[in-house]
Amino acid sequence: MASSGGRTARLWRRVHVGRNPLARRGDRLEARLLVTFLLVALFAIPVMASLGSETYAARLAVAEREAGAKHQAKAVLLADAPVSMTAGEMENVRVRASWRTPDGFDRVGEVATYRGSTRGTEIPVWLDERGDLTSPPVTKSGAATDAVSVAISAWLGVLALCALVFAAVRGLLSRLRAAQWAREWARVEREWSRR
Image (cartoon, rainbow, N blue to C red; front, side, top):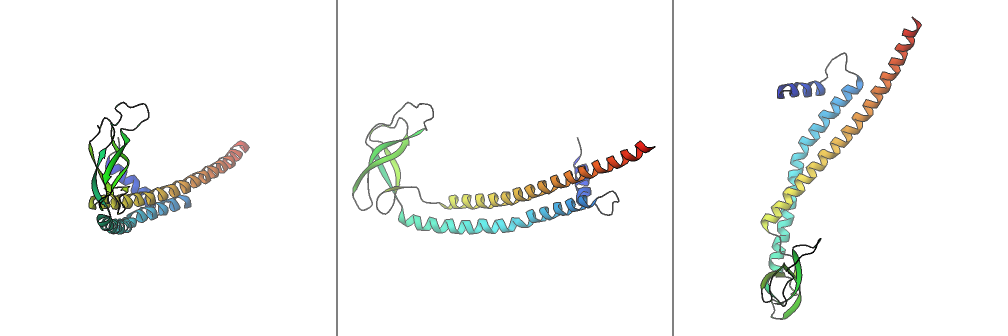
C-alpha cells in the first residue's frame, strides 16, 4: 500500500510536469486542465456558500409568510384506520376526519394518519387561511437544511461537471496517445524488418 507521501508526490508529478523531456504536449495539457479544474472546484466553494445563503434568506421569507398564513388545528378521525398492510402500501393511510377552521366552521376531509389509529383520535393538521388542509410551514431548521442541501448539491454538480470534462479530455488524449504509439511501432517494425 502506498503511503500518503507517495500519493502526494505522484499528484505533484502529474500536476507539475515541468521541463521533463519525456512529457508530451498531451501530458502538459492534462496537467493544466487538472490544475484548472482543481482551482474551479476551490473557487466554487464561496460561490456555492453565497448561493446557500441566498437560499436560506429566501426560505426564511417563506417561513415568515407561512407563519401568519398557516394555522395548526386538531382533526378528529371519523373512522378507524386499517390495521393490516398489504405489500407495497405505506405505513400512513388516509382516513376521513373533521376539523374546525380558524373562522369557526366545521370541515370534513381525509387526513394522513398511522395504521391502527382509532375513531376519535386527534391528529394535528395544518390549515391555510380558507381552512383547507395544507403542508406544515417552513421552519428555520428546514430553511437551513434546504440552504445546505442546495449549496452542497450545486458544488457537487460543479465537481461532477469538471470530472466529466476532465475524463472526456483524458480519454481523448489516451486515444491519441495510443494511435501515436501504434504509428511509431509500425514505423519501428518496418525499420527492423529491413535489417
